[in-house]
Length: 497
Image (cartoon, rainbow, N blue to C red; front, top):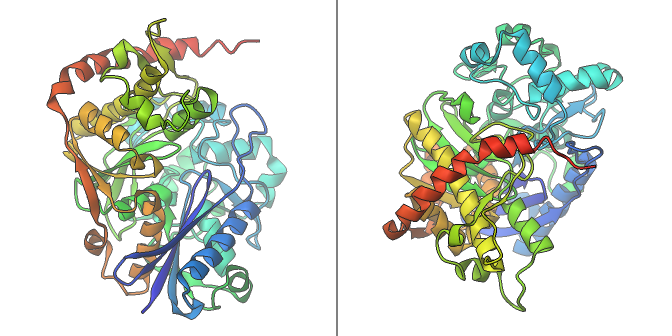
């Protein structure tokens, strides 16, 4: 029996899984690391923290499953999308990684947009305009604000590319990460010199693009010793976390979609060719397969809103869960609305300044109403993203549900009701990203036929059908919800003392 190891390097920690040749989960483990905010709007993590977590998780799953390291036939990594890692010629970081939620480069994004003739022209050329959270703007910021670091940097890659480089000694970048720069020809899966020249992008500092499902290299003696594996074990190139989650959800066929509920949330739709909705912040990146794309609409805070509520408000009752609390309020939360834009927003309206809030709050509302409104607010935001996908020809009649938030039956039921779509919970929702990475390792080593073969490896635990009786109240809530973005965006200019 052969086994495959997968890592999903997220914002809060690394999730690792060990699966067998049939795709069955054998063991899993999580190791956390800190998030740093050196300045308002900045978000960074430490590369050594990432690697330590990967080592801890690898040893834990091997020990937990009592699997001999020589039986591990392949390793796959999936890392935070839109993370920026700067490496020198030897593959060592020249600064701390800048992660996806960092919004420091807004000025550079606006400058790039102006230089190329405005948002309309950029939508035609590259499929959309950059924001301060996008890689092209962050690299421009680094060149301007940290020129010494920029000069020492030989390669820009992402979290996945860093882990592959640390494991194998080979610096590369996969198509899903390269596509997120906006400088990749998604059809050819090659760097576009024309786009790089137009944007002023340092293509000479970008590593070669390697397919997600190919073997990028093998474990070095040093990395194998740290991981507790054997030197020479194959390492797949891997992919960013969202495309890996698509694989782990099993929604990889044309038009199939998944919803992720974690710190952030997103809708991912598998499509044959790039399909962008720029004004909704929806962009396409190459999928983990040899062809095709993943259409992504990502919302910055979902589980983060829930975590904020739990830490700052709480349930108010001993032994009561947040789900119990939300279930104690009726659909529509007695007219209370929650806007989940707690750290700016990428989709359905790109806006790094906007902030969230409760609207219609009255003395009559109780803690249960606040919690239900929070769940409903995230669901309404997802409905807005789904409507934008539908306008581009992708109606997404059903959604595979993954992520830590998918453990909440109450939340999934609300999403089904609010969006009017069937929601299918996969068997191991929290491990979907890591399972996707492990499945890609199995494909890269020839143990699994191709991306389309993962469908039979991912099982649905249960489904949630929309309750049509709630359609009316959520239609009215959705109408008001959409109208509230503009005034809240204007209010965000106020930051207090």
